[in-house]
Structure formats: structure tokens, C-alpha cells
Image (cartoon, rainbow over all chains, first blue to last red; front, side):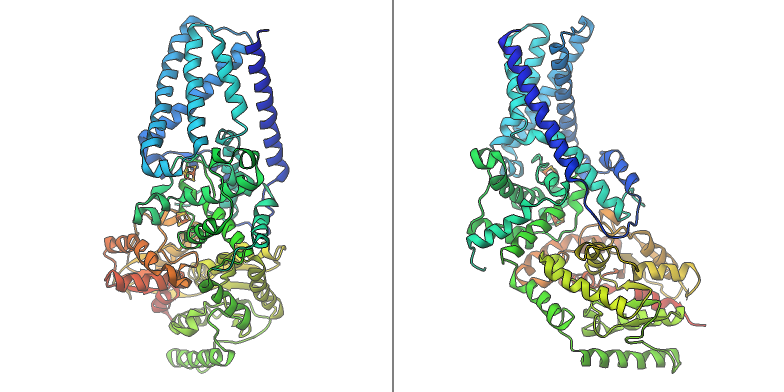
Length: 203
Length: 431
Ligand code: SF4
Ligand code: SF4
């Protein structure tokens, strides 16, 4: 096995171990012990939190910022797709030629979305004042990962595995770990609103 | 501001150190700095400055957490702009957590991740409480509650006099010498609470509720020892003091052997007791705590009180208190009531769980140092009211009433502000 494949595999293993540890920590800490009498339906609310509560028509963060919202969604889809391709590569599964072009096109679009988000972060004062080095590094690493994935669809290059390794090693350090915490945050919001009968919405 | 000592800093940090469950850990690690929560907050919408984006509050507490408790904060602090607690940070914490947030929770609903931003603000306030940095203005309200049993420092004698006078008025109005505002009766169905603003400034809202109880032939009482529904300890973040206040009300329900506690029209008070007190006292209560809004809706639905919606001809709108609606799930009841007691009702846009805070929440009315900000952020509410063309604004919260009254005169809205009980009492038909 080449050294670059090896380091990408080791990095992935470390990243995976971190994700499992974080997940285990979240689960073992558990949900809040709330002694108040339940007013609503907690399970339905949690379900709503992952579904209707995330609908773009319900969230100002989506419908007031449609271009950014769509760019964000595409960017995330591109990241997931790139990760799936990484696993396929590591497992030695090759894509058929019919799939390569549409995937490459999609990744170009998602990559452009990522760059647009980065540009917005640099130039929009509200975002700029919120941002730290980690925000920029995370954005750049994921973008480079997506672009190098496109390149790798056509030409084999060790850089692909090195960049993948950087991504996996960086994930536990910076904000990319929201990939795990996001699900826990939706759970807690659903729990809170379900307990009090706020969600699922009454109107 | 009190002096920031090493000991106080360490006490503040204990709030971030001991996770009781995964909620705090999750919320401290979830913000992606997308900034999309900005337009959901009345502060940002008013001032349009990056400083007032809700995520700034998330970032402040997260960056302190990261500085002291994470690898990145300890070894590469510049990466996540982590923050040490020093005089400058402490000043920013006080200003952002106390002076730039009503804890309305509107941003929670709209955050692209689903972070409970108001909960983090409350956690920040808990840190400041540990660090002895609660603004003196709001702390004095808590001190008064602890010392006198109510946040306005009303003496028992003064309170009893007011109630007796209101009882005389009730007897005259009902033309019934047996009409009562019972004090300290035991073994009743309902122990009713008040916001101390009522005996102090708005006694007519007590009369209104007494008339409703009279019409419903309810067995009820008010305790002279503990009638205050408010709990500003919830807002200051001092859990020990919030617990003392909650415990007094809890014990009074037990002492008087009341079957149910009815929480007066006070958003934060009802939230603090119904949702927080069981957690302060770490037990499930063996009696029900409901709001007067739910009770009145039940009275009308079951025919225990009769109302005439044609009596009031003016157009009415409703302000939804954040603590009652977005944080308490009470939404339909007030609409049902208004549908029964007024002839023309119009909603604000937006309303319900999406409603904007009036600007007086989170203890803002008790912190005069932020008055200017408070009146400015209230402009959005004033515009909402103006757009309805209503002549009466109803709100089931005395705190909101106070803020809306100030907005009414400041923005020249020319409306009347009423509680739900007042508007129901006007529509009641006494057989
Ligand atoms: S809780 Fe309300 S006031 Fe506080 S940041 Fe969120 S939207 Fe703004
Ligand atoms: S919307 Fe949520 S995730 Fe985005 S900046 Fe605001 S608090 Fe952070």
C-alpha cells in the first residue's frame, strides 16, 4: 500500500474514532433530567425537529437568505458525495464512466457554492466579524477536498489522499465537528419544544 | 461592576465545566458562524450592527469554553479566537447577556443548526451570577423578593388593605355582600398568584380576575405570605435565589392544601414556576400549575362563565408573550378566549411562536441602564401594532403590559393595553 493511501486511512481511522467518542460522550451525558410535567408530545416534536422544523419555509435563516441557503445545501451535499467517493476509492470500487461526468459537474457546482460562501464570509461585515481562523481553514479544506476529488475522478494523484488526510485530521479540532453536534442540537431543540407543547406547531 | 477576582472567575467557569447532560456541550460546539440568525433578532433588526447578531452571544460563551476546556483553546487559541475571562470579556458578557438579549428564543427557531441561543445566554448569566457580576438594578428586584416576599417590597398591611378595598368594589359591582377576594383560605381548589405590579399599580386586573372567579363560582384564595408569581432569579441566573423564591410558592400551595396553582398573567413568572421550579427543587410537583389563560379558556368552554362578544365593538389585537407562547406552548387558548369575547380580532404579523418580543423581556424592564436600547428595539412591536389598526392590544403578561404602555406613549400609538382577564371581565354576563 502506498504511503499516501496509508496516511489517509490512518487519518480516517483517527477521525472515525473521534466521531465515535464524541457520539458516545453525547449519548452517555444524556438528555436533560426535566422534572416539570410534560405538556406536549416529545417524540413527535423531536421528529418534527429533524423534518418540518428544518423546512426552508419555516426558517428565516433559509427563506430570508435563499441563495446562501441553497449554496449551503449544495456545498454540504458535495461534501457528503466526496466522502462517499473517498470510501469507494479506498475500497477499490471504481465508478462507471457514465457516472463520472455528472458527479464531476455536481462537485464543480458544489465547489463554486463553497467558494461563494467563503467570499461572503470575507466581505460581509456581519459574517466577517463572527469569523475566526478556523472558519476560513474549514471552508478552504473542504473546498480543496471537493476540487481534488473532481481531479481524482479523471487522474490519479497522491495529493487526493494527502488532502483527505488533512481533512480527517482537522475535523476533530475545528468547527467541522458540527457534523456530529448538529444532530444532537436538533434533538435537544425538539426535546425542549416537545416537553412544553410548542412543537409540533399548533398553528 | 464588582471586582473580577481569580476566585470569581473559577466559580464562573464551574458552570461550563460540569455538564449535567449533553445539552450544554452540544450547544457550545454547534455554531458554524453562518450569521443567518441575524434577522431573527429584534436587536439586530433595530441596530443593524454585527455586535447584535445572536451568534455573537453564542460565540462569546463558546470561545470562553474553548479557551479553558478544549485542546484548541489551550494549545492553538488563535484558531478559534478563544477568550480568557478578564475585565474586558466580563464587560462584554454583562452587556451581551444582560443588556442585549431578552431571552425571547426567537433566534432558536430560526438558527440554521437549531442551537438554543437563549439557553446559552441564560448559561452566560449563570456564569456572571457566580462571578458576582449581576447588574445591581435587576439584583435589587431579587433582593426585594427574598427580603419581603414580593419583588416590589409591598408590606402585608398595604397588600391586605388593597385587597379589602377591591373586595368592597367587587361587592358593589356584583351587588352581592358575599362576593369575596379570599385571603389565606385553606383546602381550596385554586391558589391564585399575582404579579406585584397588580396590587401596586394595576389593581383593576385583580378585580377582573376576582369577577371571573366569582362568575365561575370558584373555590379559590390568594396567600398574603406568597402571592408573587415573578421570579427574577430566573433572569439573573442566580439559581440559589431562584430556588428560594420557587420553594416559597411551592410550600404555600402545600400549606394551604390547594389542589391547583394558577399562575397569573405573567410570562416569565409562569415559565419560572411551571417549567423551571420543579428543576430548581429537583422534584415533580404533586399538584398542577396552570396559567390563568388556560383556566379562563376552560371556564368559557365548559360554560362556567358566560360572555357576550358584542359588548366590545373596538378592534382588538394580541401580543404573544415569548415566555408563554414560544417557551410555554400556550397559543390557542388566548385566541379561543378572544374569539369569544371580542367582536373584531386581528392578528399581528408575525404572531404565535414567531412573534417578536415587545422588548421588555429577559428582565430588561428591571435594568434602567438599558432603557434606551429597550425603547428602540420596541419600535418593531410598535409598528406591528400600528399595522393592525387595532384600538386595543391584549396581552396575557404584566411585564409586556408595562413595556407596551411605554411603547404606546413613546411611539404615539393611541391604543389601550389590557390583560386578558380585564377584557374577559368586561364581557362577562352575570346571571
Ligand atoms: S433570544 Fe431573542 S433577543 Fe436574545 S439573541 Fe435570540 S432573538 Fe435576540
Ligand atoms: S444561525 Fe445558528 S449556526 Fe448560524 S451563526 Fe447563528 S447561531 Fe450560529
